[in-house]
Length: 77
Image (cartoon, rainbow, N blue to C red; front, side, top):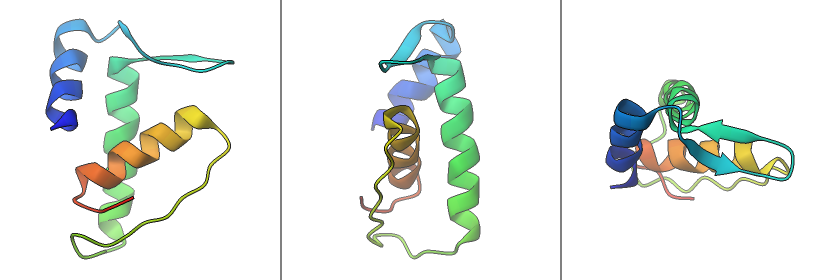
């Protein structure tokens, strides 16, 4: 799964660039930190695995973090 790959990359090359948008860059370490934080918040919502979560976020880096967290929690986007 992509979460395993990201966790691996965050561990072995955390400062390497993972996400690039027009106005920012995010390293693998920062990406994983943010995905874990959003995942924890999603877990508090007690959504059943397989639930559909629809998002629209103009900030593409944030949208990617949320999408990864959704998948990390076994939800669908």
